[in-house]
Amino acid sequence: MATFFFHEETLPPDDAGHSTLVRYYYDDIAAEALTRSFRLLSSGARMEFIDNERIPLADLRPDLKVLVRDSLTQRERSDLRLAS
Image (cartoon, rainbow, N blue to C red; front, side):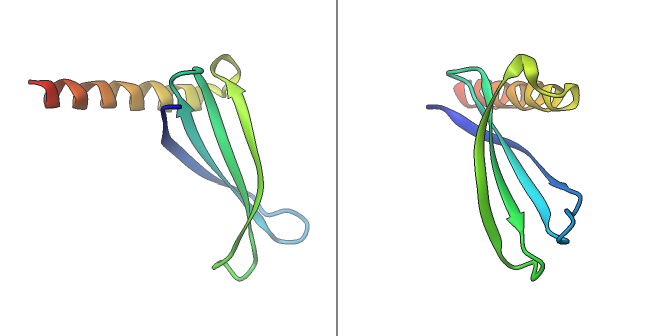
C-alpha cells in the first residue's frame, strides 16, 4: 500500500472537554483517504487512539480534495526533479 500523509485537523472539544485529532492519509493504490483519529486528553501530552476509517475520494469534503490534489501535484513535481 502506498500511502502518504496530507492533512491534520483538530476538531472542537466534546462535552468532556477532549478535542479530536484527525490525520488524513491518501492511499494511491485504492484512491481513497485513510484517517486515524485520536482523542486529545486534557493534559495535552497524551493521545488515545479512536479509530481508522476509509473514505472514497468522491466522498471527501471539497477542501480535502484540493489538499489531496495539491499533494499529488507536489509529489509528481518532486519525482520529475529527481528523475532529471
